[in-house]
Length: 390
Image (cartoon, rainbow, N blue to C red; front, side, top):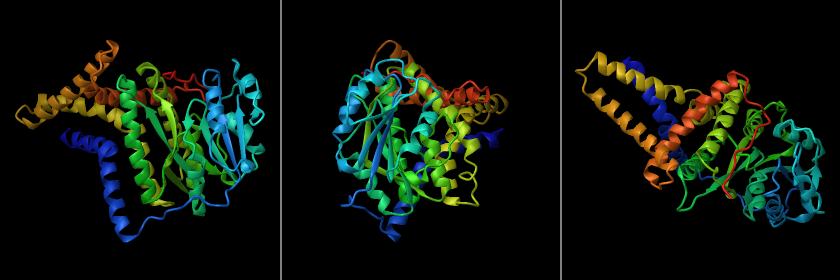
């Protein structure tokens, strides 16, 4: 029991803190031995298509179009393409009123991945940039993304996702904002070591010719597209100066819905990304992929429950081992803080010190629920999007 308890503790700490610390140290040592490559924005820009998949986004779509048209890029080399498959509101009609925008629309809703697969054969540009309809890019985003393609080893470039958090933010906003700040650091260090192991659908790009076959029932399309390119031996670069701003989920219930879907997609991707998990093909990529993604999706949620139960059993069986009374007390304090965070959010009381433990528990509950949903076959590729703060 004690052995399994400490193995579980090690995996949990490594997944959320230890990997980041180890990555930071390795990157620092690497930078002393070899100066990281830097790239300026090229004078001769590659042709580029900005691809936006939008489903029932009439509340945001005019702002999104305005944002797309304001982006800095050679207009003679830029195509802006919207896909609105299955939209039943005024989204397609609004988009069709803009001559600068190309529109693909079908009444059938088969999910985002199916819509992307339908659009890709019509794209002739060298680079394809994917972005969501309810996120807004900084004006230099496209220029910052394409500079990395001067490195022939780069097959995809991930931008940064930023969550708008203000002083009145609730637990979902504060927790989500903190999580993405930490994720951004990990992505930066992942790239400095070798490659990213993910790309957020809010903003990422690929060399169009490398677009890989991805199943239409794929739940998290961004992750699968980028990782299939990495499995071909290419690098997923990371550019924090190309970012997508997004409001947080409307509340924790909406954030939970989103996280469950992502977790179900994460489990699906583990079964499909066999090359990424094979250390005999690319050991560094496998190390990054398992440390950054697989452990969080497949191991830590259940381990949190197991070590709590093991701690209770150890205390009952070996009461003389006082240290395990302390570890049980610390777990009790942490989960009590998470519970207080949930209660305070319900009462709309703002105490951010409880938001991080609450969001941590919410995230791991979602991972567990997403795993169960995937194995039950209950997560469709076409899903109801989470409501965002307006």
